[in-house]
Amino acid sequence: MIRNCACLARKILNNNTPYSFNKQMIQRVFTEPFREFDQYKRVYLRLTVIDAYYTTNATKHHYNIEEIANSLARYNDDNLKSKFANFISNPTNNHEIFLILDGQYGINQAGPSRCTSLISKYAYFLTDLKFPIYDGNARESLNTLKKAGFFDQIGNNWNNGNNILNFFFNISHVNDQYFNDFDLLDNLLWLIKEVRDGKFHLFLRREQYMNLVNLIGNKIEFHSVLNALNNNQNFFNFMNDELPDLLRFIRFVSTMNINECNGECNDEI
Figure (cartoon, rainbow, N blue to C red):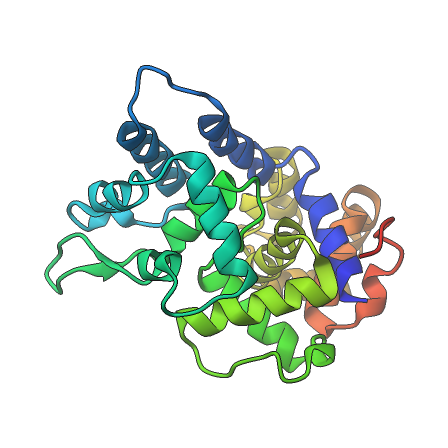
């Protein structure tokens, strides 16, 4: 089942990686009380840290962070957690959380812009990882898995069309049917996209990444990794000995063969 591949992704990402370190740093600003700050300053700090680590580029638009912070700081943390949970249990376009997610913020040459990605990441951390992240990684990987036939059991609970509400509707039903854990699902979606984009530096330690560079050259791309696995015995041996879980996940991404992930989940939904 596809949940096994998500468990394999989580195992890879939580193994003392830059990804897990960055995630812990963001979580820290949500657990620290910062009693000297009012709610607006707490929200502003959290948004700024998320934007820095995830590179959502919100600060490229003037006043984005300020306006989003104003929108979110109207609620205390517990109240906002409840509203996020209520929205994702039944996403509708008239819910106040959808209006925040779909809102226009900041100033640039083209006018205000949506910051759905940043706001969804704020919700993800505020709710203790119980809200889905909306970004290019998640959208693309979710559609890739759907086209590969992994979500056929959800039947009519899938809305076609690339808009924000459809994304939250679809990912909510996928999570309910297959994962029951938005963080686990996000691990899968994120790692599929980064592996396909060849961004191995985001989840490998420096020494591991440099081993890849030394074995296959400076240009680390998905196709060059696949080529090396098939034609470079030294590289294959390194991956098989040092990064066997990543080797299996790369094979899964390249073939969409779910058997590469067998045996990874110890729990069932």
